[in-house]
Image (cartoon, rainbow, N blue to C red; front, side, top):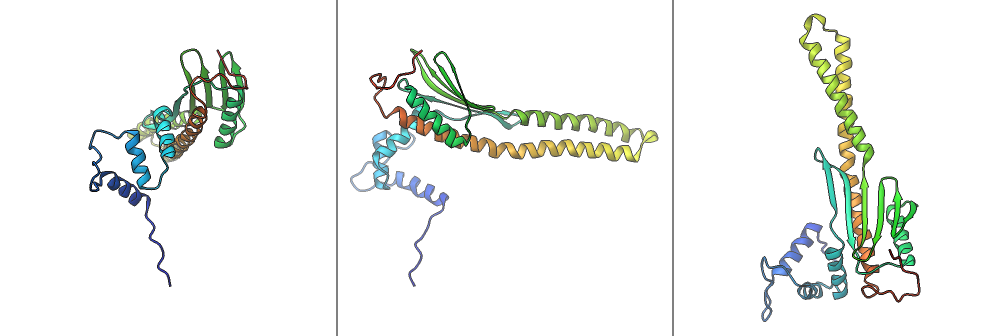
Length: 242
């Protein structure tokens, strides 16, 4: 019976790649430690592990111009997720429609389109994607805000605070202590804490999912942006201009 081929876990793959970048073959200069890597060096490493140079270049473009996801927190909990993607040129109307099609696919929502001068916006509830094009900058801004989570956490903390204060006062006032009232107040405290806890558990996966989706949008936008030379206005389709 043939022996099953060895499969490596994600942690092992990361360790292998890390070791490969530090490996020194005879006649080859080692990767400089702490000095970073050039694109040529990254592509050379990619060749060694079977990744095409154009794939490495595309990934480098996403890292360089695709921005980074910024997560704004309240009480340590993620409430707002944002990302800006730099463009090298103005997008045509057809290209903006392609971006919208990608947004609908990635976020699984039809959304609503709006125009205001040079601005183009696609939104779905609190999720907004805006194309800003003017004579100086061309950006696609992605942002979303978990508004209902802020309301739920505020309500939970309010219930905990009010019921907790009343419970403490009742317990200290033994002469007026009412067992039924104590039970009701304790249940209110537990309800408020549960509301905060459940909402907190939801926020982590929500923020990670939005980060993944925005990263996918950035990758597709960069690929579309690089499909033509910078500031190419010779396309047959109309260009969005300020």
